Amino acid sequence: MGIIDRLKDRSYQKSLPAKAARSNGKPVRNLEEAKTVAILFDATDIDDRKRTLAYADKLRKRNKQVNALGFISTADKEATFSFNFFTLRDIDWAKRPKGEHVQQWLDKEYDVLICLFPVTNRFTEFLALHNRAGLKIGPVPENTACYDLMLDMPKASPEKIIKQYESVLAKTMPQTV
Image (tube, rainbow, N blue to C red):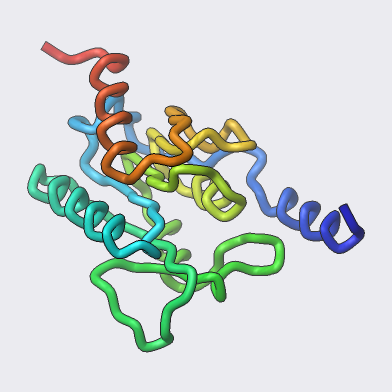
């Protein structure tokens, strides 16, 4: 690791909060209790994007407020999508996402954060640590403070990740009678 890489790493580490951000509201135990849901997903692949947006619509039909933030590796400045997104241009030299859409997404509080990236990376960890959600679900990260429920599914599609975390939540979270 060279000097520049060490500087990038040090800058990244200093930008992380000492303690993961959390919602001030009552913590939820499962998705049914949630009223607001944040979804972080890789929107580069069109099929994965469609599946994720269909899931977001399904949650909206269940009276959940959904705020999706997608990552697209490259997109035109004039590109328009039905969701907020950021690109590689919005990630700084220390792998921290910046930009208007990212900041708007981070400024809100959520009951649940669902990260549909199959593997972790620096910018998803950064966003998870700064996101104010009561329950955070995502891939196994280097920084274990990122998520409450972690799934190790490195080659899974968003559909499989969704099915897996819903299955785990149904088995582990107590159901109210």
